[in-house]
Structures are given as C-alpha cells and as structure tokens.
Image (cartoon, rainbow, N blue to C red; front, side, top):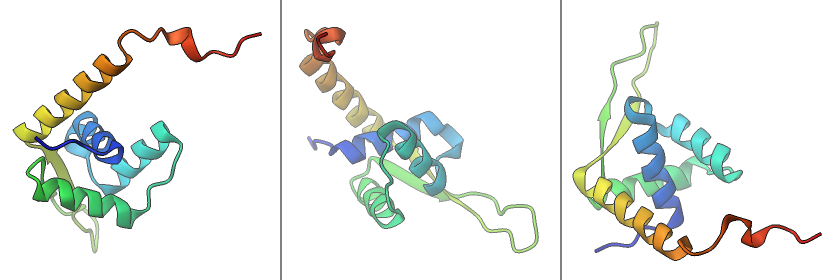
Length: 109
C-alpha cells in the first residue's frame, strides 16, 4: 500500500472534484485556492506523471478547442486504485483528527 504525499492527496482530490474538467490549469488553480500556495507547472506535471505511473490516475486528450489553432487539453481521471487511495487518505485524516475539537487551536483572549 502506497502512502500519498500531501500534494498527491490534494491533486487526487481536485481531480475527483473537477470531474471532466481536470487538467493542468484547473488543478493548479484549485490547489492555490485551497492551500494559498502556487504550484509551479513542473512540480504539478511531475506529480501527475507519478500518479499515472502508480496507476492512481489516467489521462486522455480532450477534443481540440473549436477555434483556429485550437489545442487539446490533457484531462485527468481517477482510477479505481486512485479512488481507494483517496478514501484511505480521508480515513487516516479522520482518525488522526477525530477527537480534536474544532476550537482546540483558537486563540485565547
């Protein structure tokens, strides 16, 4: 069983959330929106490559964009193994944080 890094976990989650619109730009925007950090394209595509190699994600080309010189996008989808890995990551988070109340880290006045 392979343990996901935080970046891998987030990228898998964004692929799941974005459904048929999960490609480099949208995954990167989601990452920044949630984490507040910019993920450079090199790091993003290296992680996506690793996820594909591990069998957690597969990719396919979209149709070309309907305009002159329109390019296709590389879309990413979770495999069954990717879904299982994401479920395991969620369970680990829930178990780890389960008995910690939400207010535990609020500043004391």
